[in-house]
Amino acid sequence: MTNKYLKIGSILFTGLLAFVACSSDDDTSDGDDDNTVAELHNAYGAFDTENTTILLDGDEVVIETNGMPNHTSPYWSSTTERVAIDPMGNTLVTEASATDHELFVEPTVTSYMKMAPGNIDDFNGSYSLTVSANPSLATTSSATGLGAIGIAVSGAVIYNDNEGPNDPLDSAVSSLDYTGAHTGPQSYHYHLEPKAWSEDDDSLIGVIADGFFLYGRKCNATGTYPTDLDASGGHTSTTQYATEAEYHYHIQNELYLNQYYILFPGDYQGSPSTVL
Image (cartoon, rainbow, N blue to C red; front, side):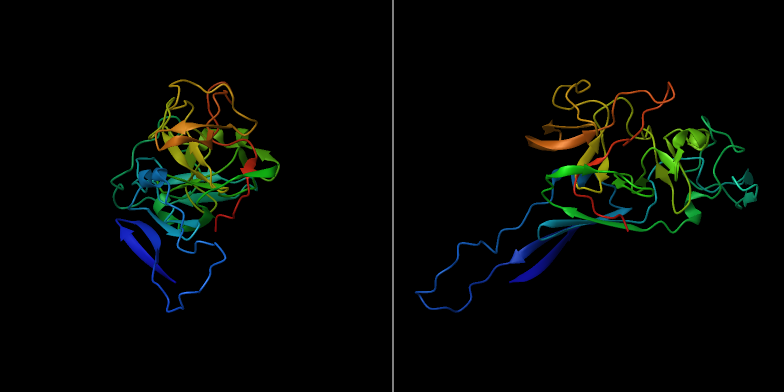
């Protein structure tokens, strides 16, 4: 039995190259079907194929990304120099570029003075996440940690509601761009509802590190806000990518600081892998 990889765009599928081994007619089997492989979930087709590569390897899915978003942001390089002061009082300078990046836009909800240091294109934000192709709920939930906890359909990564150790997002929310993201320490990443492609809707946001997908605030099955979410914003229903009901997360329709919606403030309900 040999693994065979098929690449369509930047989404790769693995099948098992089936063959019949030489055996006698009275050869028996223990009933295991070694030729059965999981299918790549339809939702993975929504991920940006320029920034991500998605591989089905047996019963696991490997999502690799360059960490770059596919949309506009003031955090792309520009001709404006930015100066920030870190918590230790150090002056951090983001140097001006000769030209504006093609996806650069002027800051709106933040300002040059409040933006975090570093441009999107300054970071080498490559990440890899391996999850089950058929994730299941764990016996007990587990807390998310600092750093990436998932990969968004844009190619950038998802963070939780903390800015640092024992440091809630309140202290950094003013640095977030119009789509709820900022740079540092390793890459551009989202904390809030990513308005670049999802605002008060049922759009796919990405995949969380336990293999379950994260959707916008509305439920595709009902067209409105789900009322049966668990503590992590999860429930079981059909989606635009699944005709059979399955467990998935939603951005919870609960205001944070009276104006924002945090992407994922809860615990993992499945068994998480590490985003490397």
